Length: 299
Image (cartoon, rainbow, N blue to C red; front, side, top):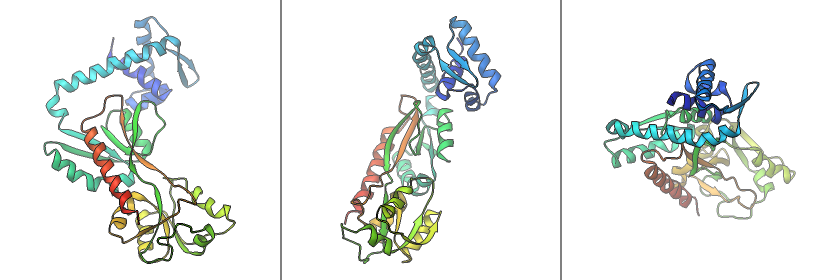
């Protein structure tokens, strides 16, 4: 029984597609199909029901899947054992844009200080590409939005909730009963991107039948933050990008939890069931980093 054949089978299951499995394995579709058919001949069982471009497991395929995964996992563990010196010296980390810019620059020097013998390699990419790289085993850990994929272990690891912020001394600071109409009357810097459902912010004003006074609408976090710091208006921003400003009280959070909760997280993700090297340390540090941000925003 060939490990490559087992991997082709497992990838086809995870992607529910021979075509996508071939892309992930950097192989042609006929090659993946041939490997799976060879595996089926060896087992004398049909593993997939094929319909069009999609595939679904047969009952025998479902029974075989955990054994195939265990065989491949044992094989990977054996390879790591045989090359322990090299495998334990590098941690390859993937991160989406906000994690790359606002978390890793703080984390990496401390991780290197704690583990000087390790080399940390960072790959910045979109969430979709990070998922692909995890499935291809090109990353040990990724910091990203939650992904709908059963093959990945994911845990919320960084608080990136959206907060309404302003300069110190604003009339809204310290209040807990601000109405949507009052918010709508203030000049606003509106940052909007695909990282969050910003329609929920708009609905605050729609429900109150008021139109927000959006003076600037931008698609870049640092531009939006700079405008708010210059006094151009108040604005909703993700926690990670304003962590330092909140801690140093350059910006102050305006309480809006009575109007809506804008909770979101960055997830730590890895492939398979066995945690990668340094996972517990990375998870612990991220929790401490996120916790200090929460504490700094309480006034």
